Length: 113
Image (cartoon, rainbow, N blue to C red; front, side, top):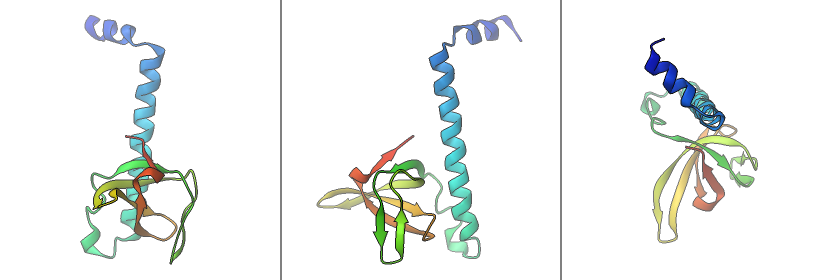
């Protein structure tokens, strides 16, 4: 390792290392959820790349739809912000339980990235 790399490594604080570890974990979870969605819909070519650009999010309340329970409070998923309506933006999140995209209120989701 060159001296400048050693100096840079030495300048990292424990907080810096923790943040870097969290970023790696968030990226890993996002990729896992995206791969699960893509695998579930692999028979349908129109879904290829559908979830590209979606971010890891945490759902803050239990959500029921006509298809049943879509999200349990505190669960993680992939989601994106959509244009919404007069009431403000909405979030489209992928429900692992129902295997479909589901619209949620913006205030019911926290994006982790």
